[in-house]
Length: 215
Image (cartoon, rainbow, N blue to C red; front, side):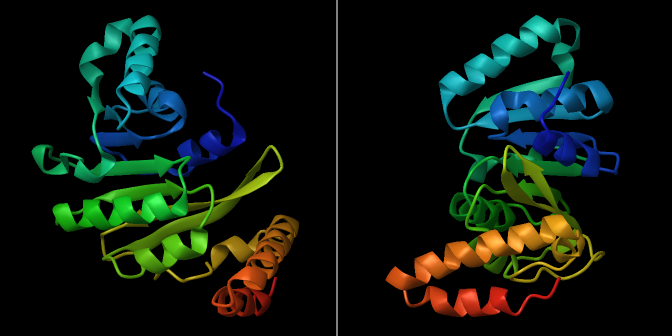
């Protein structure tokens, strides 16, 4: 199965053995399907839109007909993941949706589940808002990096409730250590907030913070 650069980066960053992997809103189940091939985990496919889950189900029945016991499908609000019903190491992947929605989902998931769980996030925008929300939760950074696909640069955050890793910062740390890619991303972010600040003065503080980033 051929993944795009973004999904492949998400797949490759995962370096732990999990018993359960939750693929939430991730490009029609492509990432979860890849983990069916590359891991021993039980894969949970989740989307709030029933029609999208029906499509994922159809594809899985077509390409993974002999592995039906290794996956589950849910037409469910991601904020209500039934993590407590399962045991072992769990990874929740939320990718391809906005940072605002991701922040809301993370608040609810962490409020509803107080055991250890890892998260892999790749929002399409509003990364600053998301990071500020994540700072209020009991999470640490396992790894963070930038990935580029189709002229868009994405932040990838691999997080854990285990007391390992580094603290979450509003702007990120390791993402500014990727040389030319980091420089181009910083320029894009600064241009974006320069434009936003013209209509929303409160964005000026965010712009000022990004202007202090050194590559």
